[in-house]
Structure formats: C-alpha cells, structure tokens
Length: 232
Image 1 (cartoon, helix red, strand yellow):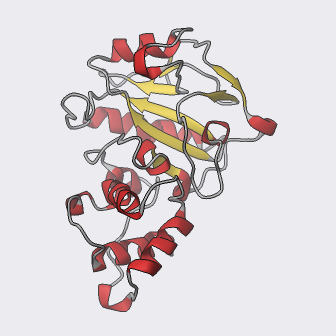
Image 2 (cartoon, helix red, strand yellow):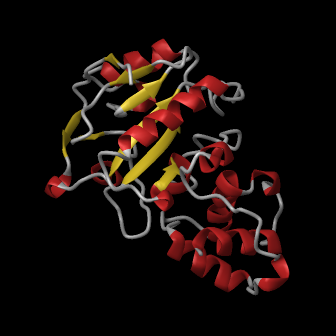
C-alpha cells in the first residue's frame, strides 16, 4: 500500500533479533497529526512524550506515514507487559492513529482511518506471525498508565475483518460459571499482566471489549462470559 516515508532516529535493534509477534494500536493524543509527526521524528525529548516513535501513523487524511522499518525496535510502548512479554517494543509493531484522545476531545475515529488500518494490519500479517490475541491497545499492555486507543476505538470492526479478538456473543451466560477470583486469574492468564490492581485491569479489559460497562463497580456475568469467549 502507498506510504509516506518519514524516517525517525528514534529506534534500535529488537532484543535478541526476535521477530514481532504483537501489534499495538495507539492514538496520538495530539491536536493535529502534524504535531504527532514532529514528535515522532524529533531526535530530542519532547515534553512528556520523551523520544518516541511508532512504526506507522495513520493521519487525519487517512494517509499512512512510515517512521521505522518493521525489523527494527520502535519506541512506542514504554513500561508495559502482555503475558510473559515485558519488552513490548522488541516484540511488537506500533501503529498510531491521529485522534486528539482523552487529552482533548476523544472524537470518533474517522471511518477511512479504520479501513486503512485494516488494510495495513493485513499486509503486516503477511510478513509476520501475529495472532489475534496479540493485537491490542496501549491501554491493554499498560493498564492504569495509558488509555489509548480509548473506548471509542472500533475493535468490533477489526474483528469483523478477521483482526483481533472480540466476544461473538454465541456463548450463553448461563453456560459459563465463575466468580471474581477466577475472573481475575483468567484475565491475567489471557495477558493482562501489567502491574496494576484488579479494578484497573477490569476497567481496561472493558475499555477494549465491553466499553458499555465502564463505570460498573463489580465483575458482572457479562465480563465473565466475554473473557471466556475470547479465551476459547
């Protein structure tokens, strides 16, 4: 697919020369896509962003900007983990999507952005073995520290295109048993292993899979059923 080359100096080698096995989706959290581009190509720390870079960004015109070669380690994940993976940058490809985020308006994502994202991920997966379980958001791997891509991100649209996991609602709640303890044990087994308390892990699980339950205090049967569904 057509891309705009924007080489960034903010990268290094993947630890151990490993291949990427994850895709991490972010929003830029900037007022403009140009602001994000300037941050990603800057060789110096920029405010609270530090020196950062994704492999790709999809801008407000749904164009793909390429900053880092996929074989290299971009700096987009920060302190994070997923299951037993603690060096997410070495294990992943980072994709930013322009959106002002929780920092500003958290507007709906532009439909064309998501269409391009789907095409980009499908192309990436022709080169690397990346399972659906490992296509996640920044908030999944850094629960309590990051909120992106946010509760408005259309994960279901990606799942309908064969990308990522989402509950398919084919499992009846009465067929799934569990309680709080087993839910959080299973949640951590699924991948939510960033140091955070259970309330935060539940919130970020919901932000991805069940955003309509955000703000509900306790684990519900819908949470238990959804987790069982995506884990099956």
